[in-house]
Structure formats: structure tokens, C-alpha cells
Length: 449
Image (cartoon, rainbow, N blue to C red; front, side, top):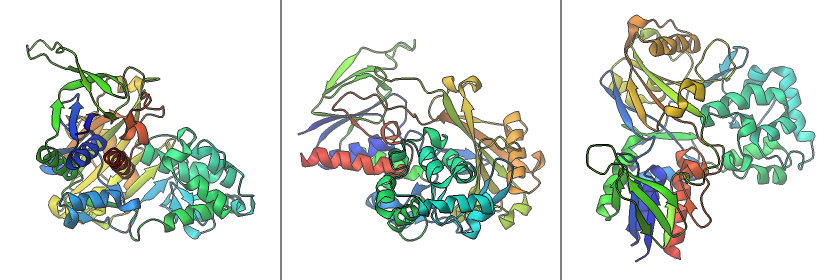
């Protein structure tokens, strides 16, 4: 039997371990924490069970949907409310997010919904993309550089910056183009313009919504994956930290020796034919992450929100002066199943970008903290929610609040040794679709070999 060690029990590690074990490999999975799933988890706010992290997945490639069907969740896949999201620009203007776009890049720069955001002059500058030779910008390293050269600063700042901040928690000038928009560079050269390249990429996506969810929450995927690990005999070792990851061996240490003193246990070397990492190698990491994301969830009793004044939520320019939140999701508008469960109450999810000076260096993945509705955190989130949704929301209507913090995605490589197969956000970036696709491809490659 092929022996494989999987380091890290996030969704990437779980999918790879499941597929390998199902295909007959002998799999050991080590996870430093006491639970599996990474940032895909759940918590309870005001008596409502909610996703703690990811609450949707991209439908491109249908990778997550196919996995959900295999896990017995095919009938539980749901699409969001079609009203869509809005955005807030740097100067506080709000408008619906243009429909025909990719990461905020418009496919039709002079469409009415694009002009409503960037103005006529910004739209005309973006339309010049169709007159530029295809190779212009084709060698751009980052998403920001590509958009700036092809469509100008206005489209970059008013559209791409808030979308990138909401999706990747990073400025477009720091996002590797091929990592966040695979195939877009080739499409630009093939189509001759960035706008046409965006439309071509969108045309390849499945018909319907660009995202989907699971009735009851995305965390149900983890429940079923973990159950399959047991079914297929994966040796799961929680509380086991990898201190060195190599092509054919992983050095691990139990985080607790069982004495109750908090001392680590004895080191062990796990030898394998293949090593898969759902984490960055701690012994080779180039630099430490210095930013984090905070998600504040509010449950409010405010009937004025029934009209969904800003659709399913809003993306916010990082430099907008009126609010601190970088995005808000009106979850009970976005997901009808959740509205039924909430019984007339509204669930609002606000995300914030934190720096090291905010204590991000002490924040671990999946750390959750309940917050009283009258706390400073909930007070800030309540004020932001009111400003973004355009509806008065005061402390008296907040009946539950919670927050969770986790580290932002790395912009540096995972630092894996040659031959170690990287899966998960440390290697492929955040997003369930990309993570699942990579994990399944890696597992299939090992089994085929």
C-alpha cells in the first residue's frame, strides 16, 4: 500500500486524505489543534447555529458541488438570493456591484451598472482596453498591475480594490495574478482585451449563481469528510504538531505529553512514500503573517431590514472613511434557509482587517469569542451595519453577537521543501473551490502513479 502523511486537517487535508484512503492508500493525518476543518467551523449566536468562517463556495468547475454530492449532500446545495451585493467606494458612494465582472474587473466597461460606480470618465478610460494591443499588461505579476495598465486607476480603485479586499483580504497590488485569476492571462492574449477575457472566463463558469451554499451551513462538508476518514481507516492524530516537513518524512511532536504540565511529548518521525501539506512548513517559512481577519456576527430584531435595502450585503473600499468594516453579508437575505431558521430575526456578518498592532500576532486560526451586545466590538459593528445598510440599528435591537479571528492568507509561498505536495490555502490561496480542486488532483496523481 502507498503510505501518505497529510499534514494539516483543514478542508484541503481532509479531502486529500479521504480520496487517498478511499483509493487504497495507507494515510496518516496529523493536526496540531484539537479539531478538524480549519476555518470551516460553526458557532451558535442567539440560539442560531451559524457558519463560523466560510458560508459559501464558488461554483466554477463544480468541484465543491461534486464533492458535496459524493458526501451525500447533493440535495442540500442551495443558491443565494439573486438580488446580489452592493459596494461602497473610497468616497462613500454606494451602488449595486456590476454583474458581468471577475474580481471586480468589468466585462463591459460602459455598462450602466459600471458607470454608476466609476463614472463616465472612468468607464471611457476602461473602454480603451479594447483598443490596446493584447500583449499590453500580459506580463503583469499582480492583479492590480494588470487592471491599472488595461483599464486605469478608477476601475482599479472603485471596483477591484473593494472586491479583492472582500474576497482575499489583500490589495490587488499584492495578489499574484495567476494564483487568484488562473487562466485570465491566457484569455487576455487570446481575446485581445481584458474585458473580453473576463467575459470569456465567465462564459466557462456553470450557468446560474457564481456561488452556492449548503442548507444548514458549509460546516456540514467537514462533518461528512471527517466521517469518511473514519470509514476509510485514516489514522487521524489530533494535537500533533509538524515541526519539519520533507518529501518522504515528517517530524512531529505531540503538543501535550499527557502529564498536565503543558509540555510537548516525544518527537517522532513519520516516513512515507508521499507527503502532502495543508500548511506552510514552519521550519522554512519566509516570513510571519502580520495580519488577521475578524468576523463579527450580529443577530438583530429590526423589521426595517426585511426589505433587504442593500441586497445580500456590501463590499467596502479599505479606505472608506465612514466605516471600519471591509464587508457585510446580510446572511438572512442571502440564504432563505437561514431566514427560516432565524424566525424573523436578521443575521449580519461584518468582516474587519486587523494588523499586528491590533494583536493579530497572538490570534490563532478558529479562535472564537462570544461578545455581549453592548460591548465595544458589537457597538462598532452595529454602527457599521447601520451605515452600510442604510437602516437605523441601535443596541436595543441587537439580541446576540459574536466574533471570531483568524490569520489572513499568506502572500508569501508556503515554504515547502521540493517534492512536498501543497494543498490548502497556504499553497493555493483562500477559496474552497481552488482548495478542493487541488487536493483532489494531488490525490488522484498519487493513486494513478
